Amino acid sequence: EEVIKQIQEWQDLGLSGKRVAINFSAKQLNDEGYIDYLRATLSRYNVDASMLEIEITESIFLEKKQLAIDFLNRLKDLGVKIALDDFGTGYSSFSYLIFLPVDKIKLDKSLSDKFLDLESVKIMDSLISLSHSLGLEVIAEGVEEKAQFKRLKAGKCDYIQGYLFSKPLEADQA
Image (tube, rainbow, N blue to C red):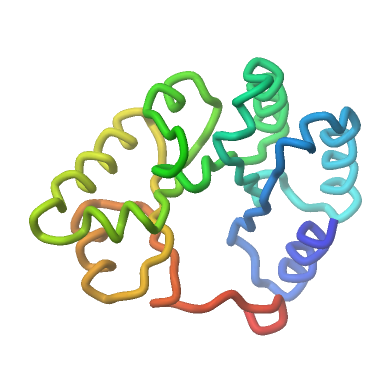
């Protein structure tokens, strides 16, 4: 609710157009009222669902894969965007991306650290290209150096996030 309220406050100030992401835990899958609550909250604050992005990790699919897929499809039906966070850690697999209803993947910082040097930069470019071929946008997390930014930009990464641009901020600072 706080995120949706903040989006509405920014809209009232004429600062619209930036989607805000929130984390979603596997426990929340068991909350049968979550989607109705989300729908009502978006309506109460007059915020379009497309302004909200839910970040999930692949652990959400480990136990109840079909339940998770159905739940995410219901979120997408509302207009909420879905991002697969921390891709490249744990059991990450491109096979997930074929059947998961996600809009983008967030490449974990460990991938950037590992694959952005000159000898292995083609691997990062291939990850981005493969993601694009699946219709997904790509965010690189944890970018701290200008050289990383330039390399990811050259590799056609859609979004780049990290301390190079800003540390996390409070809403009023943002």
